[in-house]
Length: 516
Image (tube, rainbow, N blue to C red; front, side, top):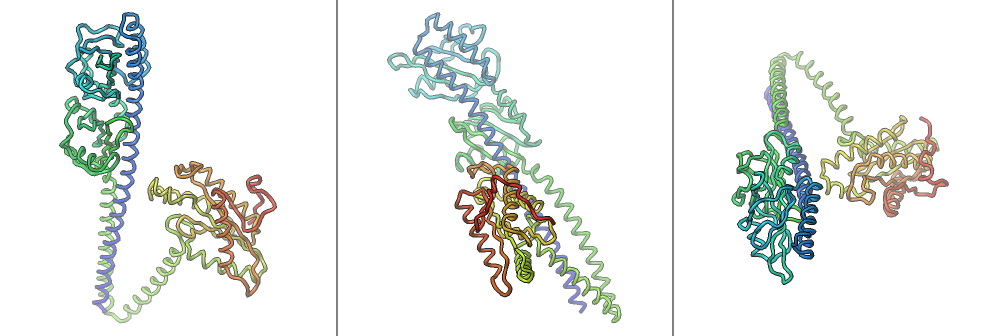
């Protein structure tokens, strides 16, 4: 007996440790998955920001090239062009200046009030590129430092041709790197987070934390650049930074229209800092609990030497076991995610209410509810968001449906819910289903996978008055399920009944509800 008691205490301690370890690991994975989604959303926002800024700049360049090639470079045309360039720079906050250079690299026109003197940019990378390439598309060059104001700039340029298609010069727009730095500074990336804008040729455009030495750095031999080349235009990877040696969760994404990509990186240590604190608290609690269990076990073994005390301990253990079984039985009847009754409790209650309705010749109504396009929701937003969506819907159903002692709201399975309504006609049940549908729609949970753009419900409703010793609860479920199938087939986001109603739910969403 003593051996078995000792073994029991050891197993309980081991189970506590194992359960705490599993809980901690699960929490860690959930935290990392949540932050992967956050980093991906951050990279998407950065890519859109950069793409929009460059796109607006490129549109200006297209107009400049067309004006030069059509109107030429006489003094009147250049005067009009300079005013246009100044207006462009005033309208776009990302622009530092706009320039026109001839085929020799000499300045022709720009947006500044004071024209540069004896300025020749024939040696700049973007000028050499256009002189040696016939491509008429935009070119994003390596970052340069302005010779007029000393700012770090990203050049965006297009080639100018003469009437014979020969190289005639370059139209240049310079984007102030501080424009990107201001946006990146506004992002919440933690103390050790980092964001970067990098060209597909491997040149660092800018980065936060920012430093002049970072701009223009060759990134081709870094883990970040190799991961981008290996995993494609959008991916997530854990990488040790070549800049500061910090391991970060990196989400990178290519710009939609230009050969650049952004990287949003969150420090892995910062992501897991809260998890570590919780884990240490859990571990301390488990160790404390294990010490209590060990002490109780030791005392129990000592007391087992006395026969009378052993019998008393056995009675208390029996009572505790009965209490535990009652608690477990209660927990077994509740759905852990939504807080509604689970399928087991629903089946038991349905059978009981069906037999009671047969004895009392009363009506029993059933609503079957299904979340529309829920698989697509999980695919788009992830299972964590899907679980939160189900919890929100469960709260709505619990608030609206389970108002009388006999009513039961349950999670039927997956994204399906069920509401069992004793002493309720089909019209009242359909009215309640419509109110639930409208309440969920009013939550406006965004769902890009539906035509409505929000999470919606479909519901099937049926009611019956069972005959004694005839019929089966399964028939009520099948009828409600067929009504639900009809709601899905008719386009979702609606309530259908197994039999036609004498009023329009859409026109009368607040039909009378039986008093409790």
